[in-house]
Image 1: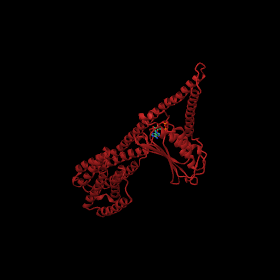
Image 2: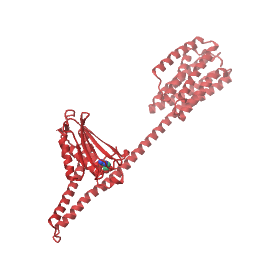
Image 3: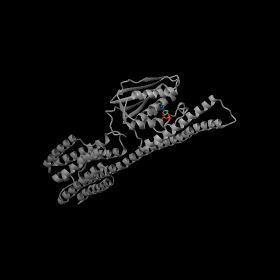
Image 4: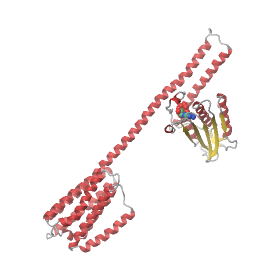
Length: 461
Ligand code: ADP
């Protein structure tokens, strides 16, 4: 009767662990919880089989109970022990390979054959306990060896290690009912500890998830703060960019309108010139804002036709020379450049923009190169300057809207941080790419690549 009671205890523990683990799996759908639910299920069946064997043969003593388990209970016991190893691997996220699985399968069949053959002999208990003990030790190793180690895995591994040692030495510990009670109490406690540690892994994972989420939130927050700063910079830049030309236009028109201030023809001409330039500046700003909103809304239209780029680039160079007669500008464009599928006006807008930036962000005495070459099924156009350059960590961001490199030397120049974003929008609408290579203090190369007329997709955007 005492023996039945002793065997009932682990059955109760395994059943409780089965219910808890299955409920946790139901809630979270974690794979390792499913594996452990199966392991505890097999363990429950094993302990129940032991109760049945012991209850049906009252003459069984504590010493020889393992010799009389029979093939069903012994196989269940083995399956539970190997299951602990499988569960340990699942817990450590180290799934078993096909080869490992086959090897364990073959060993299991051999072991069950040996244990069954010995059934009834005194050696049966030793073989059974040693077999179970070795499987527990393998499970412990699967949890204790991998690095980095976590507290929960170490705890579960420690419990399985002690369970393995207990399994092996219990062969000598169980001499009578008292020894059996001590051994059973030990193994129940260790099994409960291992089972609870498996559930503890859930807490660990939740904590890891929360840490990862808070890291993501912190990054998103920093990004939002940066966007916010860029927006306020943009608002102040736009108002400055609007106010400056408007102020100049108003001032000059006011002077021109005053009858009491006689102006000679040359001065009037000069004033009208300034008004003309400032009006152009205002028009450019409004056009940029409109283009930007079209790009954002995905409604920027490009009318792509086969276009010879050599002439287009020469026109851009002429426009820059007319605006900046003192600036050295070299054209490095082969005349036999294959035609690309492009919206002439839009690509000219990109090149003008890159040239304007090159002038704006480099000293007057330094030259600028406008080059092109046929490469990778398209044409690459590049604008090279020897100006202030862009720090490596800012190079990815220059194509983002409102972005202006923070350095004070950039801030000296008027600008809205929209030009390069618009360039990227236009180039991408052509199925191309745009990039920058730059070294602070040495200069920048802005380049874009668009496909050739026959390579490009013929759907107009
Ligand atoms: P804007 O020139 O109006 O500020 P852009 O979008 O054209 O706007 O450029 C974004 C930023 O990229 C500029 O503020 C500047 O910091 C940097 N940049 C662009 N072109 C160059 C260049 N050729 N050399 C150095 N920095 C540049």
